[in-house]
Image (tube, rainbow over all chains, first blue to last red; front, side, top):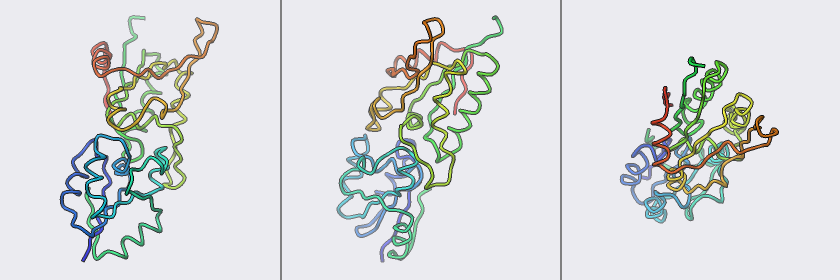
Length: 102
Length: 135
């Protein structure tokens, strides 16, 4: 019974991503969308907090939202992968429920 | 000239996730049309507004980042960007688009509009205004 968590807020302006990371169970997935995609970048003040969960939780970023913001997939930290809208649908289908962290 | 005031537009939000960034740019252009002394500040997530290579086809929104390059034509030539905000987000000045203005008092020489400033310098910029508008 796994959950897909979506995060759509910038991790630098709210505690949303940190709260999600602190509540996601091993085996869950987190998809960063909209302004949430900044949470997947390498070399930020929050990279360590995300990296600490990349093994136990599948962490993805929506590539269309990355591209819109001028961020190349190479800027993502290790263990975080970019997925398209089709990957978003797959994640919804693979998990038992979706929880949105707004 | 006594009617001219110093206006600072403070940008603290990332583009696209909310409408703040686009609305700020619209208001800047209006203020500039009224021949006020306009400067822009980018701090916190506002620095993300200036990243180069934005491509919004995939999210079905207007890419407004090229509009920043038109600000020089409206005599908006000072875009202050806070260094600490860049650092915290893993960005450097090289990640930002090039924005130039032509100095008519210096044989139309092209000069960069973006000025990277420290947090303390940004505080001084803010304290030096008649009107501060926040987005």
